[in-house]
Image (cartoon, rainbow, N blue to C red; front, side):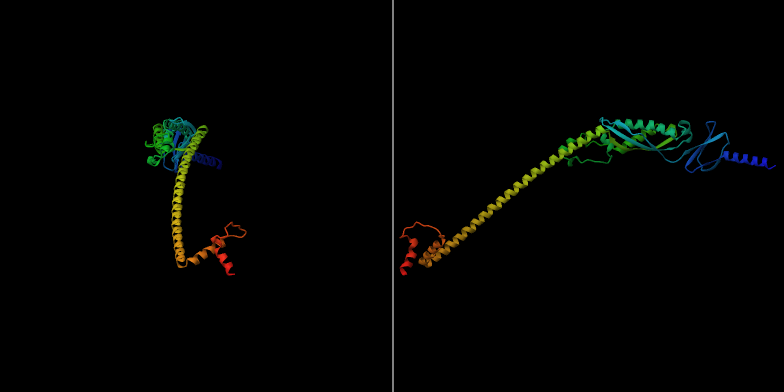
Length: 312
């Protein structure tokens, strides 16, 4: 007698389990019957009911979803090939339209691959490289640059540039025009990374090295010229100082000679005989040893020696 009741209870449990479904806070759901949606979108979280075994539940995320594009090699307007890596964020805003158009998130990402990649390729290929890599608020004061630096830049520095942020807005606007029919909304499109391809990177690096070497050579030349100017000025000042020192030395020597002459004159005037005697003794002392002098015997040089001999 208990088996029928147990069987009925089991069937009721299975029926209830197949009829109930739960919608999470971050989800929205659509009831599908024989592959076609039935009713509206269920957005309220909690326990809900459906027809068992006939209807199925398709759940979709209400949160922001990420899209990462493939790394693409794209030529810019100036024919520089660059590697562009893009990313985007999107959300499902119309679950019914989303289900009818792309079925699931994998299908949506496939469609976004086609849409965003084509928009990014069109915008990058029609834009100069400097507009892609720079920011919109970056400003160049041309007056602070030398003519060589301005000539080395192959672009008009005074021309206003869009910048990467404006290009990303254009990418978002271009891709968003193609997504309403998919039931999704693009929130933003970002350029995550830009790089040259290997061959172009080598050319750019060589050009940058050549430009830096040219600027370094100009700086060295200017420094050498300034160095020679400083050395020349130093030599001129040294000559002026040496000349002034020599002039002052000659003035001092002249004054000293004049003073010595004056003193000698006073001494000679006080006692001419003693002065002559003193000067003769100085001349005797000036004659070194082992010195031979050829002088007449009656020379005044021997006057005091002869007088001393006569006294002895």
